[in-house]
Length: 352
Image (spheres, rainbow, N blue to C red):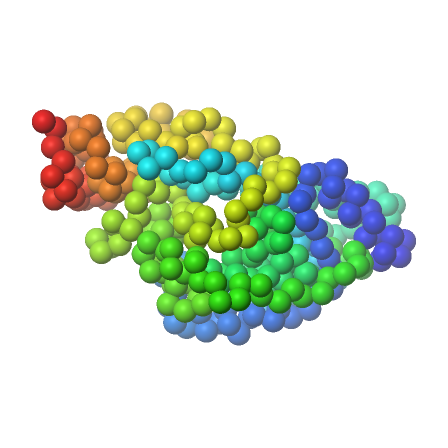
């Protein structure tokens, strides 16, 4: 089959799999690799030392390291539902993580596309699906493929979908032509709403994220104590953060046909009851994170985040719950429970 004929197969398979956007480009050196190196050199990756490891650098510089004979990379976007505005009296989970774990959901869809390509050719095709599972500069690939442009908050913005998407890649050892694929220029103009909205000042400049100050990093990637000077900026977030996305004009509309599997599975995942969460047993916490992206953090991190959120929300009912965590087995949890109690006292919140 010709590359264009395979492109038609990919486009049809992607539509049936429920992918919101799909594009294909030849495997070539990334355009933003040196920017990535400078980002690492500035220490903006924080505790994520693995990002600077040789294997991660090699994969980001050359997709051929990830799949021998790689010729095409298909970049796919799966939309998720931003839902209703956040409830300021309850906790918050980043919208992409409120439903089923997107890693498995998107990987399965990419495998369906790969199976259709192999069936169309009539022989096995070497493929590698990547959903945060391989060192890939996915936003660089998506931009080069013409899916969207990189916003000032470093997220990919797709006209018609905004940044309410998760990205995945399918590397193939065959040529696929989907047509189009012209890189899209930035459409941010003079707007800096996302940068100004960040509660912890995580953007030292446009297109530059200092992960060490990012609420998503602090609540997910970091295994340490959240720096005291940043804890109030965490607000009610217990996993990730959507503040810069909420401020973006391109995200004003709900994406059409978001993936049902990524929709919040229940009210407690759309807006968690922090009192119940901090008081939960280990078994209850395991059930809460089961089959969701929240599995990325352990018990201590989740309770750390929830304690900080309770300190920020100012609910007097949190005081006895937080006191009970002063005897927690984890020093990390004890420290943040103590901070939350002190923060409530500072704000004049009492049980009476």
